[in-house]
Image 1 (cartoon, rainbow over the protein chains, first blue to last red):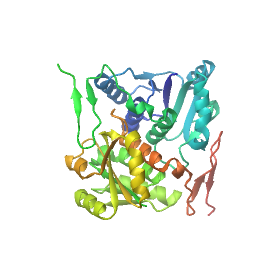
Image 2: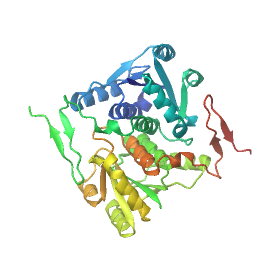
Image 3: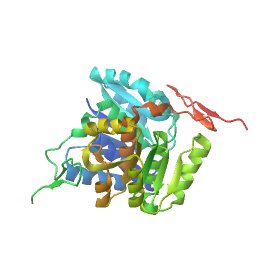
Image 4: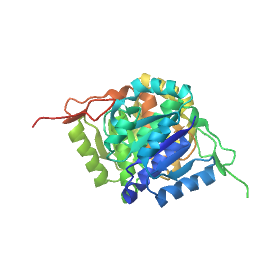
Length: 179
Length: 179
């Protein structure tokens, strides 16, 4: 199974830090790739720097048309989940999504900035809310992936990492690669 | 039980949007109050606007000394959890924290911006990581509160709300107060 995150509605300078948090959260919680509709150097460089130092092969990619991408993804054994505060509660929907995954489907998660075009709702197999209060797309992707993977992705360890953290109750323990 | 979030290391302009996402996520996932060490108009106004429209009595407050605040909180039947990528894995620690809560303790969650002073590690009862990969403090507070409340806070509904969302599988359904 692959997990992709599609960031719709990124507004350049205004969103660069939030979009970077979305991307790094996607990587840390188990996604394989984040897709943007327009390039953004700040986000791309932040992602590449983290992957270079912390390992793995999470990718930042730019696509031309998000609508065509979603349609192709669905045709290609994929399930599409749109995270939105207007959707069905994740508590009710997550088990159905897990069942889809268990049949071998790949997953594409759509996460918008402030406004998301109506087509996203129509194209998605699931419109899922992480509660119906306004909060954050970073929080939404974090909770969704944590629920999907049931905490298992929190133990990921990359062989090619130059920096690793050893969990510790009382201090920072960081292992860096010998030069 | 009350849940407070203490934002340490907020760097004004640079952090205003991330700190706003931390605050709104704290509110949406069940915290009662967010505490800052310095005032920030952008964050304060965003929080107040959301509370005004969406209801409840979540508070943005500014405190003088975070160290004294933590010490007083602990003396006053409180448990202090510091969220950090260097800490013990949440998967292992969450049950101990829930046991503390079940004995009637209040909870203070410390969430830093980029660098957090060493004293935070020493003062905290728990230093908890949401995985040991770099990601986002918004993701950290989101996952921690979701695990703590086991999804129950996702159904919160406020009587004084001027705007409400009705969960829907296929479209936006928003109810606004009649004037």
